[in-house]
Amino acid sequence: MNNNNKNTELLGESVPIVELRAIIKQVAPTDVTVLITGESGVGKEVVAKEIHLQSKRSNMPFITVNCGAIPEGIIESELFGHVKGSFTGAVESRKGYFEAASGGTIFLDEIGELPLQVQVKFLRVIENGEYMKVGGAKTEKVNVRIIAATNKNLEQLIASNSFREDLYYRLRSINIYILPLRERKVDIKILFDHFLEQFTSRNSVIFKGITDEAMDFIMNYSWPGNIRQLKNFTESLITLYNEKKIELADVLKQLNISKQENYLPAQLNGYERQDERQLLFGALFELKKDIMDIKHQLNSIEDNKLSAVPEKGFFLSDERIDNISFDEFEQELLTYYYNKYQGNINRIADKLKISNRTLYRKFKLYGLKNGKAY
Ligand SMILES: Nc1ncnc2c1ncn2[C@@H]1O[C@H](COP(=O)(O)OP(=O)(O)OP(=O)(O)O)[C@@H](O)[C@H]1O
Ligand SMILES: [Mg+2]
Image 1 (cartoon, rainbow, N blue to C red):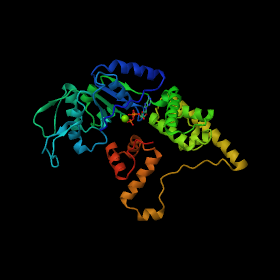
Image 2 (image 1 turned 90 degrees about the horizontal axis):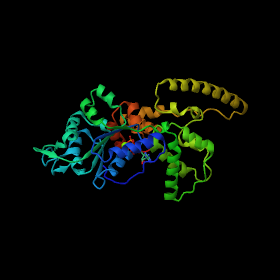
Image 3 (image 1 turned 90 degrees about the vertical axis):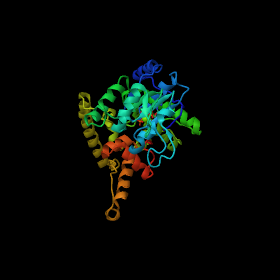
Image 4 (image 1 turned 135 degrees about the vertical axis):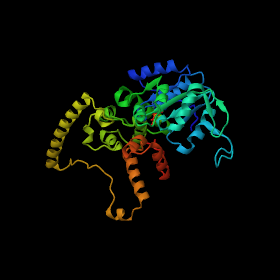
């Protein structure tokens, strides 16, 4: 849980962001439940806070609960509280997050991770503000505004029977979808400049400029981790390369991109959408890649300089395999994916086909930072 009213200004001048500000203005003064969707790092929490800050509840608590990070067994008690003696270890009564958020706003992040039996209880709170503490005998009433967020496709979760349809329709009445950064490119420059300004002034680092070519790449990159990735990227770039003007090679290195991938059009570099445009891009890209490959080969015959950088994969030596325990193997594999996807929990969980909750637990176990870091 996180209770901080610190505001991050919702930056951006793209049409979708201007429209988003208008929607926030409209919904903020009401108590209506809002569902915020969009890829990881697009700013769902920023929007939720903004709604709270523009509401009449702004002086009351804003409580963020990451539903995916709470172990399944205690989630109900964390949300609704419990009474003394309700289960082994419940030596004291405990307030739940709903009670703590009383009068204010509760932001339920990663709502798709809420276990089914808790979803029923959640539906009841949304509907009439009523809930029961774990082990409690009486109905409690709370006045709280609910905002939920997810980067999962809830319709798919409904199809696999892990999300309740009635809850989905109840939540979806106001759905704010935040576009990925690559679909609102004008914001990339605005955000880059903002993070640069913020970081250099806070850390007394001097920025010696960036080449047009490097900036162009940043503007056209797909940013699969969206604004969070852009922010962390900007900060590390400035930290590591502040001695001189930043060049394209520095950017590529920081993004872990080999020279060949550099030619990948932005739309194909992230979450693929199989529409016609994508297929066309794919065909064009293949063509361009072939031409570049031929060019590279010709060049390397000439001066043997441009051999492509091979991709580093997951590799264990025979000796290591002979001595490795299962836990160590798991740790090696998770660390590999952690580095490969810059700690992006959703992408790693999707890749390994395990739940975010299990992954959080394993990250914690192996001392990997909470999975939000890029
Ligand atoms: N429009 C914006 N203007 C300025 N900063 C932003 C904006 N959107 C996001 N950020 C910053 O980007 C980072 C990620 O934002 P946020 O945590 O709101 O994303 P999210 O959609 O909730 O991600 P996740 O799905 O991974 O939880 C934060 O540091 C946030 O301050
Ligand atoms: Mg979030």
